[in-house]
Length: 585
Image 1 (cartoon, one colour):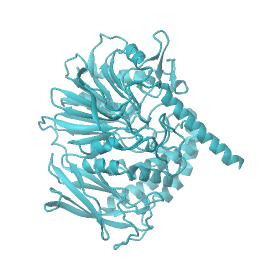
Image 2: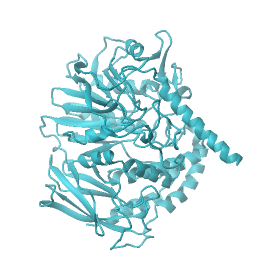
Image 3: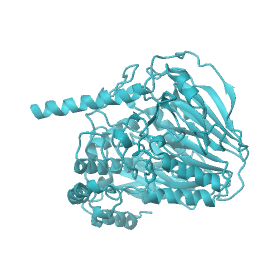
Image 4: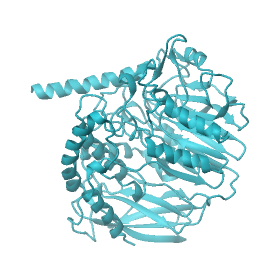
């Protein structure tokens, strides 16, 4: 059934609501600039998201196959799931669709041959949302595998497989899922997704950096770039659409999307490196950055299997949300980018100052933080899981006498982190699991009530997943690995190969398998489990249960943690040089 009124209502809300009512301009020194940005933003929204201006083409004919970006499903509930596709016969050039609204039929079945179809309907693919389709199928059975497909004109999409969650509160004995992040297209091939698609998983979480914003060969991996971004640094809505389409065109990524339902959240590169709220990294006015963020958020929604509750509201987008896997695990999907205070001390890796130690600083924003603590306090699940982006546990650099910390991670917001761990401790929570991406390497750490006291209470574990490709091939360890582990007794594991993390969960035990490939600069790498750790809610911390050598992998590299930041810095300098050349010409 075509549900036009609901979407139209959202569109009109986007057009009519004022920019000033959003909460993202919280810094007093930016208020004036934010208001100026808001005035210009209204026209941008109205022009890009207008309603009712396009005729409906009930019998479309496509010059090329329209389902080039594949299919996906996501945000599963016990009785519902989102089905996604986008009509894009010319994906890297705006999609190649006419300025018409196109009906897209869909059906979902209990078998892959569609002999037992349980639901079918039609959605409208609209130009104002890049002819993307987000079908919220309801009335499904809990904990059930389904197959789905789309049809438009005479063209059929590939078949996707999805699964609903168990009923809320129901007794669940186990689940298996994977999480991934950081997939810079130029840095390597998505071989990890080829292997992930063959796993037996209930769900996939993506924790951010789904795309990267850089122009061709601006951000270069230590092992070189092997693919090329199709356009310059992305800024406009069409730019972001084309970049998402290029990433989505990868066959291995499409296979992983088609194999399992995904739950997604973003980090920074979906917009720009290390942005904080409405504060850009460098070299932009706040007004221009808010326009850029608006375009980026819209393109992100258009390309992800998200519900209409996440439809962007100007430069705002509701992305934090929760999912319950029966009584086994409650997942709290966080947004550590949209509402945060600016990085302290000018960002980078710095010693703490009064600014970074300010007790009022926030990573999540007051509303999201209250939402998280409220859910944690009321949870009756065996496991409470924070699916989020940035390193949560303390991670010291520098020296013992002069430590430094990443100002972009939770270490740059220690009071905000302490509020969460203090709350968990006060509620006697011993089952907190944090899933993390961002840093292009695998780490495993105990979550402690006081990271500076090795004998303090352990309330859970953090599993940090490496990148899919970002950073290039990697190695088993880096030049600074031993020193960092010695400085941080809470951290129990490091590895620098690319890959993903597979988690197997029972009421008694959480197991994380670090699944890695030895190289990404050419296809064909095999996957193996570098190490496995378990957490058992006994206050004893992480236990390593397997450790394996990785065939064909480099054992140790000359790289250090700071090299990743230097590569971003060089990329930014290339961008600024291009801008200077453009002005001079």
